[in-house]
Image (cartoon, rainbow, N blue to C red; front, side, top):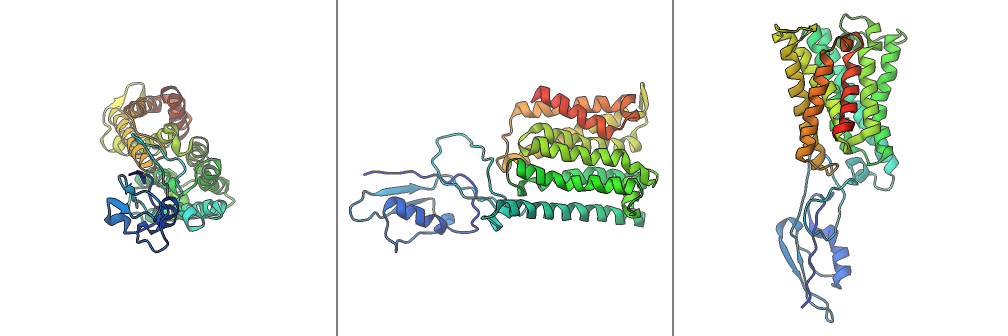
Length: 338
């Protein structure tokens, strides 16, 4: 008796049954056209009756992963695996499954959807600012925290490689153009100006918000979702710097001796927020197979967050802009530790 073991490792883009595999399995094992194929989800081990002159084959379904997370579907992979976890960097995103014959159009669709999400988020915070629900400074920092992190949540929709990263990077890239037009006074949008500036001056958008969008765009294009460096840079910029300001303003009575504009509790909050956000996105992208979580990476994230928080307390960071110094520090230190 001959036996063949087939493992199904990667997530399926099918929502239900084993029927998608039937043609390939029937062809491989010489089964007739009328052979029954039970449901994938209802069987752990299947014994398929062979054709007249072929030996008996047994198919063991030992590893089935059907993941439906954040609305994304995935491509189907069928192969033999021995042991350990295999990273799958070529999983098909939702858009690619919807338009499988044209991956370029699929990435364009993903970019359009991501742009709509980003624009809706900005409009939401702009409306919050207009209504005066939150303090102006708090509202600005909530924009700072949420926009970049939500943008990263959309990365699995794109394909792997430079095409996906460039089209994804165009989303904050378009925002760079908007910041320039608003900051120069060529375009008017009071809601956006109020939500992203300290004093309601449109010229402020030419500094911090412009650096912010540029950093996220470049980190996306250059490092993409397979590198912990890009994850650390964006998480320390968004979560770290954002929570440092919120916590520091509220509880920062103890100032740092060499920079009276910064507080000790704010710097501690920056380390924890940037570090925890980095860990969260490490597991997030690992669940899609883009990278593999490991303790060395966790330690690297901690080192990067500590270095970023230290640089953020320096007077030069205040004079330049922490939207520039924090991600730059994250990238430089990340190159050394990852």
